[in-house]
Amino acid sequence: MHRLSITLALILTYMVFAVLLNSVGTVILQSIATFGVTKQGASVLEACKDLPIAVVSFLTAAYLPRFGYRRAMMVGLAIVGVACLAMPLLDSFAMTRVLFIAIGVSFALVKVGVYSSIGLVTADRRAHASLTNTIEGLFMVGVLGGYWLFGAFIDHDNPADAAWIDVYYVLAAICAAALALLAASPLDESAARDESGAAPSFLDMVALLKKPLAYVFLLSAFMYVLIEQSLGTWLPTFNREILQLPAAMSVQIASIYAGSLALGRLGAGVVLRRLSWYPLLNLCVVGMGVLVILTLPLAANVAHDPDVTWFNAPLAAYVLPMIGLLMAPIYPVLNSVMLSALPPSRHAAMTGLIVIFSALGGTTGSLLTGFVFAHVGGQRAFYVSLLPMVAILVALALFRRETERAAPLAV
Image (tube, rainbow, N blue to C red; front, side):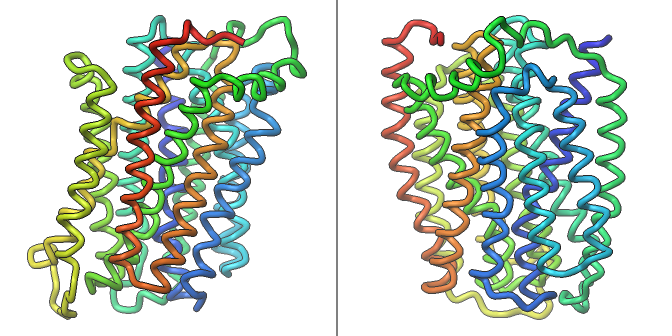
């Protein structure tokens, strides 16, 4: 019963941050309309979110086993809940930047806590991989729900109206509910602690970087998140400016991307029972590239239709987000393979590195896509994603080689 309770608490906490983290694309779109900022100016929100994730993960990840994973997650929820309450009261682009800084700081605590706790509530590698895929799948369900939640608060007749900011009252209430559930859910964290103490554990993060298996894995994670965030962050703006859709619909139809990621991750466990992870991920990456090449020409020269609906929207609006089905298994599978090779006492250090490199990949992808979007248009901006796809294929080959040659990684 206790295991079920803490698992549900982990899932709800992670889903809250799914909504908040992946709202950046919607908030960029609405900040351009409501606060009058430029595309490049708005793209800084990704850095406001991701750089604090990287910094806080680096500074705190190795110390969290002693502080307590559950306690860290509760602190993260409290910080972001207060920031959500402040957003409608101080509705400005400056407050939006502060909000995403708070989200970044909090998520650094929460992701290390969630990922490290998976090893404490599962008995073996198969269970670890299954729960990781389930949590990441439900994370994408949260992302999908977030698109519709924000879309419901956007004024269809006047997209520039600041009424959308009231959505943060709802999000603050969800944070409070997740905090209460965590507070009521016991978690045995004794296996996460060893006799080395905080200082040697901090050095574990540096020691892990010396392992070829670790840095090849981190390169793969960096490239994956670069693609996922560049597409997810700029898809609402792509829908609005390239496909000529209304603002609210541009946000809501982007939920197809989150939905396809959710379905792909929840279904990955079934596929992996019959197919090894390496050929599966290669097929996914190649399929992603083919989909981009075939779909983006459909977005060329779309004429504005004031009567556009879900039934007559451009085909590209539905097909491009389906890339999420192919992307879905890559991140959780890589993370599970890597963490399963480590003892539970090293999961916090490795998760800290995962969070750092994921954050850097997300920021790089968003800034690069925003720059290309502003200077040469949205179509060419999404073609840029083909380059990191090639890099992922190379990194996957190196990662498989290292997993085959290395004994279980220990520090």
